[in-house]
Structure formats: structure tokens, C-alpha cells
Length: 113
Image (cartoon, rainbow, N blue to C red):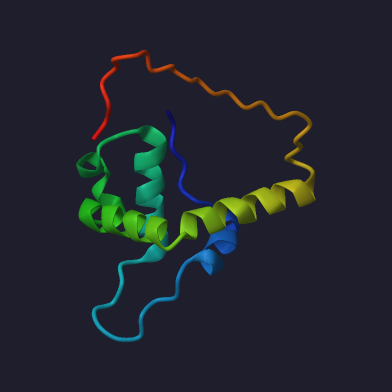
């Protein structure tokens, strides 16, 4: 799959949704570069250690990805993109399908725990 880095317009949309940089301690690696690295891994499906070096250290990208997940930032970004899509008429939901599979446990089946 082909990967394209964030455009200036995309970055302008995304940047305000990220947590602010700390004012003390070691300077944080460049947000745009690291986010592009995270997106590269997620889109291409490569291993973290195979992320191109131009995006910084893969360990930094992995930690930042995990931090953003734990803080709910990815969810916030997704919701903002969805809101934008609805407002621009690029996203429409006319039908929703939910699929579920249930497996019955027969008598004598193994129990978890």
C-alpha cells in the first residue's frame, strides 16, 4: 500500500488535537515527523523497527502511539474527522449493519478460569 505523508492542510487539522508539549524536561521529538511515522506503520503494516529512519526512532513512535491511545487522542481525532466529514457531506450513514457470532457452550464444555 502506498503511503503519503500528511499535507500542510491535514497537519493544520490534526495538530490542535494533540496534547501540548511539556514545558519542562527533555524536548519532545517533532510531532509531525513522529505522527507520519506512526501512520506509516499503521497504513503499510510494517513492523515498528522497519519504520523508515526519516520519521525518527521507531521506539519513540511506538511510545507516542501508545501514549496517544491511552490518553484517548486517537478517539478524539477520529471523532473530529467524522464530524468534519458529516459537515462537508463526505460521510453519510444511511444503513448500519451489526454482525455478531455466538457459540453455544455444550454441556461438559471447558470453563474459562
